[in-house]
Amino acid sequence: MTNRRQLLLAAACAGLPAFAQTQAPARLEKITVAGWSKPITEVTPLLVDADKGFYRAQGVALDYVPGAGGGDAIRNILGGQADVAFTDPGSLFAALDKGEKLRAIYDIYPQNVFNVVSLKKSGIRKPADLKGKRIGVYSLSSGTRQNLQLLLHTAGLSESDVQIVVTGLLNFAPLLQGQVDATAATDTGLAIGRRRGVGEVDVMEVGRYLNVSSDLFVVREETYQRRKEALRAFLRGYRDAADWMIREPAEAASLAGKRAIDGSDAELALEVIRLRNASSMSDLTRRQGLGAIDVASLQKAAEVYRQLELVRNPIDMRQVVATDLLPGK
Image (tube, rainbow, N blue to C red; front, side):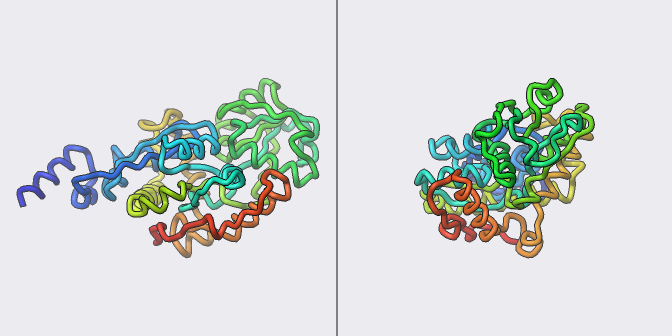
């Protein structure tokens, strides 16, 4: 009994919430997530464990390694800097095409959140209008580039028909300054751009053409085989954090102001939180729980990427997706 009281007292001092104080084990298993971004508002579920204790309650000590695109996240797990990649399907397909042994274990955002945005005055209304134009992307290893390629394909175009410009995350400033004619972004990126005065724009949503997942948690095959229990615990923690953000968006936005580098604008943070909450849900997740993976949708996307010659080899997503670690409802 004395040891239990000591554990509870230590948990209370560490700031764990009540449910975590009764569940947190004495020893924590470290899991490092490689992100596609810096610690920004839209990854709030990975930033608030010091406040909420979702991962510690599952026995996980969580760490976050920033990146500049989903390709960076994949490289960080391949290089041993992280255990789990927060990455987009295109980056996953590219790595699989090179022969990397990877597993997709959780669908973070089953909705496609990517778009291509142009100022109204540019006259760019449809994918065909992008021919010969300068188009901004977050990075060459980002989902913005890969989803731009998908959009171009719908008009019979490829990257050789446009000029790609790397702008970083703050890509609406180059659009306003005339450095690019259009910019590939996400729904949250567009929300930030509108908040900062981008004005009247036309938006081409990639999801209207291919509504595939935007981001997944991906691990190396070796990590999947060797650390299943730790990964299950991590996914339970993430599921609980994502569910909390859906139920308590105002609290999540408030904590983003403390933990995210871009969370100082409370109203914008709340808008970003709500957009991410919406993209976390699908018909499949409503039936099976957060994180459920639509294998057929990913397979369709992999085949489109091959048609585009973005990958050369056939990819069987049934051999890549692992559902046995999912926490379920």
